[in-house]
Length: 239
Image 1 (cartoon, rainbow, N blue to C red):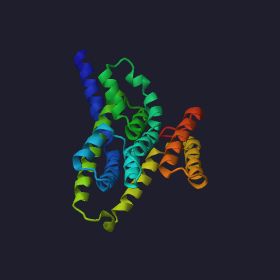
Image 2: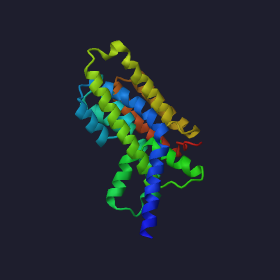
Image 3: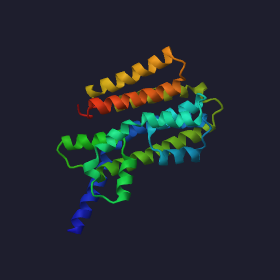
Image 4: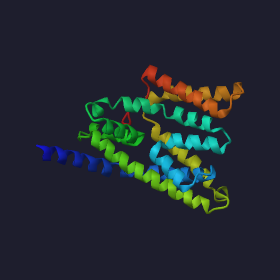
């Protein structure tokens, strides 16, 4: 009996690692762009790797470091990144079934490794009629974490060797990567409301008030997350 249970979680862990590989290529792309951005913010290779391991939230890390590069304070950078990551409260709340009854270390591990990519893959796999649960999510998350840390640290090391990264057009890589992130976050028509509120709030605060853009993004992120919570916005990846 114990052997069968062990075989099941090993099989599920491997399936999650295998199935996430195509999505991991996209993560590597904006991981490279983030590494260049981190170097511009004077993050060393070690600091970039530590941030990637402990925070492990690509879009939030990009937003926070972008604010530092733009001259915003540390507080504004942290709050901006946290506000952008509020959507993960909805993602992790949807994992109650997978986390129920597990020891604390497994719950914390699952929450830390939950991303847009492996969460969406979990649901897509189930829709396709194949089993996928907690260890499937963790397997995918471990691969994404490894790819993210390696690519960001490598890019940060490379960028430190270049006197002027912008001269090579690497700045556009960040813009392209952020567009890719937005596309990756889109889950269906249910996102129209929350995204629309966030965009309108950002534009209104920047054009009509003297609020700094960094704080406008924070307020807009909170407004968008609140809209999603109230309206139930945010469709699954297969919508």
